[in-house]
Image 1 (cartoon, one colour):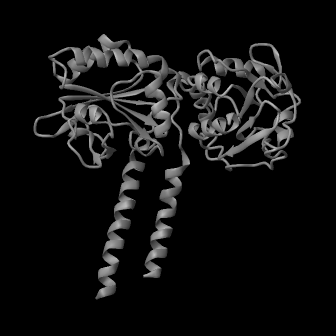
Image 2 (image 1 turned 90 degrees about the vertical axis):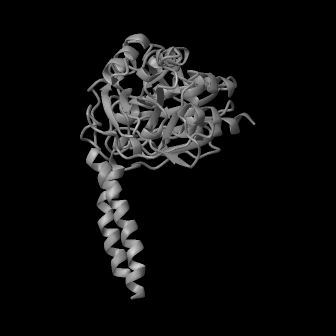
Image 3 (image 1 turned 135 degrees about the vertical axis):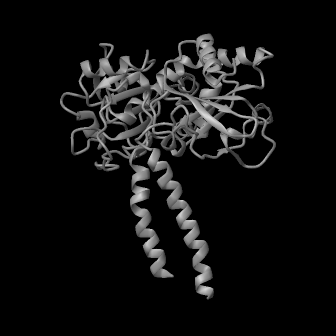
Amino acid sequence: MKTHGKLVGVALIPLVFLWSTTCFAISDAFKKNIYNPGLLKPTDSVLKVNVGDYAPDFTLRAVAGERISLSQYRGKKNVVLSFVPAAWTPVCSDQWPGYNIVEDIFDRHDAILLGITVDNIPTLFAWTNQMGTLWFPVLSDFWPHGAVAGRYGLLRSDGTSERALVVIDKKGIIRYIHVNDINKRPRLENLVKELEGVQK
Amino acid sequence: MNREIKKIPLAVATGALALALLYCLAFANTAPPQPGSVLPDLNLPVPERAGERNYLGLEGGAYFKIPEIKAHVVIIEIFSMYCPYCQREAPEINRMYGIIEKNPDLKGKVKVIGIGAGNSPFEVGIFKEKYRVAFPLFSDDDFALHKCFGEVRTPYFIGVKINDDGRHRVFYSKLGEFKGAEPFLELMLQLSGLQ
């Protein structure tokens, strides 16, 4: 019986692997311009910040042209940092467009969303244009390459960032860090739950 | 003897799981159901809302198959709340649903459902609320249905004709190309033979 179970297990491994390899639904908004890097190591960095720490400040240029500092929201807004690995890749392309229709949820929790990738501004400009008009700033952490992601411990060994969410309260304290499996999109409800916690 | 008997259910269950996975893997990365073919043999959860159960003509149980929907034509939209085109087209698809429901010749005969590829029930709920979608939407949280539909990009539309004897066939299967409520509905009625 044990042998039978082992055989079954071995037989199912490739099936389960194949089943789990591609878990994304690309919007036709991006046509055939999405590069599929295949299945990646789920996480590939070591966090340098913890819940309860002051969030390291940074200033980055936004696609719209302005320079945005984390500290400008101190005392005014809760902040959600959404790091995504790279423009024109499958899961990333289908993450921020979802956040784009829930501005009311962020408003309800007195929060601003800052999207961050290590791509340069022209790339981010072309990519985010496919998403429609985004209500939140998209910031380029391109140069020095991935410096902000690196300070938070979210820079992967290949120079992309993790798919991560960081919630920072109005005092500048990190209240939530979630480094998601890079191959999958984080569930929206988990972020909403954390925002509710920050408001209490 | 007892050992042999115990092996049978395990072997059957394992075989069924493997076959189910293989069945959908055969669809994954290949092609969605094409016109003239039948749908993958999939189960959807019976909606909790009584209004949606009534709309689909489902009497009870936990799961149902799309050809069990009480209709002559079912239009399936594979969407995602994260898809900009799905967001943009949602009001027009709602309008198409409204046109169907207001037309006595179509109401009850043509039904619309949506499947949220990779969307959790919460995320489907966000989409439904945001765009005030009145027809039933289903969560495909783990992409299981999406894989069986050939991992299509979104929005993707499938038209299914259901015969009185319960048999069905796909008559439309295309990515996007939702040119508006009236022309799309007209196309569905023409291709299905309902008109």
